[in-house]
Amino acid sequence: MSPDAVNSLQDDRTLPSREITMPRSNIDTVRAMFDAYLAHDPDAADQLLADDVSFTSPQDDHIDKQAYFQRCFPTADRLTSQEIVEVVDAGGDSVFVMYEYELRSGDRHRNTEFITVCGGQITDIHVFFGGQVRRAASPDELTSRNG
Image (cartoon, rainbow, N blue to C red; front, top):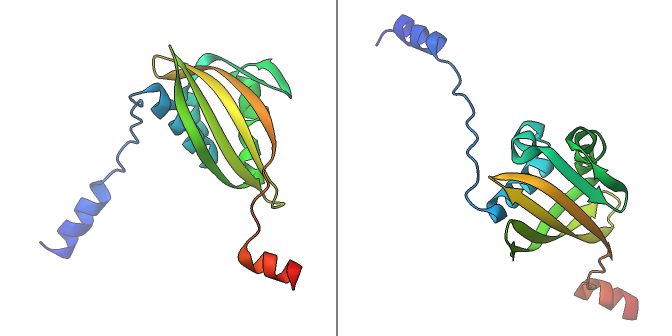
């Protein structure tokens, strides 16, 4: 194929549209929402959250989707990591998820959420704040303390 033909083909290419497939299970939906949060992907999160979603935490009392995106979604910037410790089907349409996250300050915390999923979308989120997670000292740290 001539260089002109190759260039012509390249010019005619369009980027494939990004298809979001709805997760298969309620647990998959919750995991996908955590992924969207960490990736700072509001488009994916918007598809996973029902229009009438309600978000409740010790700092937010039944806020709506718009308020969630304004107040809560941007907080992922404060994290250096977040790991799901446990996620279990709570029966019906609900899921419990426990996760740990590390702040840029180095502090590590653990929270639990009770999330309701209907038709592949999250309709209700209740966040329960946990305390700071204390990590075990490394052998080097123990040696330096005792030596």
